[in-house]
Image 1 (tube, helix red, strand yellow):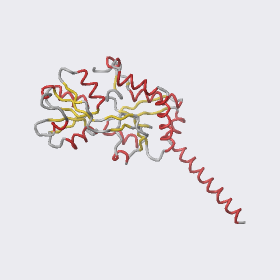
Image 2 (cartoon, helix red, strand yellow; image 1 turned 180 degrees about the horizontal axis):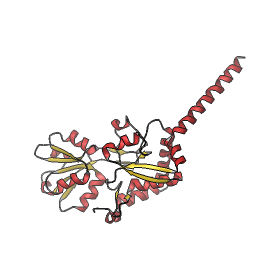
Image 3 (cartoon, helix red, strand yellow; image 1 turned 180 degrees about the vertical axis):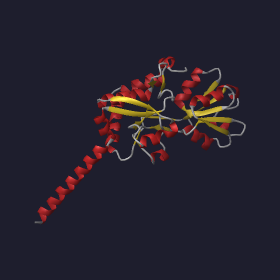
Image 4 (cartoon, helix red, strand yellow; image 1 turned 60 degrees about the vertical axis):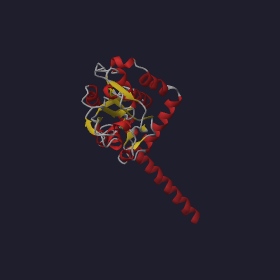
Length: 270
């Protein structure tokens, strides 16, 4: 009798576990994407070369190409939802889109609100300075004085890094990268702290006005964010990334967006 009871108990436990797994799958964003036939991707178009507008107004970039590839593997269409940076995590949490793919740095604070798939690229903060101070400023450390005005984009890790590493400088945050870096180009600010890819591309376009201190002074992994409690979606994303990083697809996209410059002529405002 005891063996019968134990066997029945094991069956009930297995059934309960299977039911729990099924309930979790029903709620998974991945399941909803497949049912809907559409992958909704949240981003903020304006972060070269990850996501930006071309001259037709379409959103293009490294993240955009990865999202299109992701949707192709799922067998669904993809829709991009342009969202202001300061509201992008709340928009994910309220189901405005399924995944946040917008060059977001993985931080402990953000990880309290969302789950991140394994980082898909690692970057760091660098500095663009006005050419007029290039003879005096050779490192980000040289900017840590009230003599210098340093600008950032509001709510970014560049903003956080500036406040952490340059507390003595005169700091000001702007809503967009373009507004902030324009202050440096026009001489109204001395330096701009932001992610290496953007600064590298931007400095190449405005060599007459800007100098890039290109040695990163932070280490920042970027990740795709999803809502918490969704292991199925995370598992799929991590296996997708493993696949494209090992079949040459990822390398081809990286070369296109980070090492090539052909796309620049098609970017709005460039």
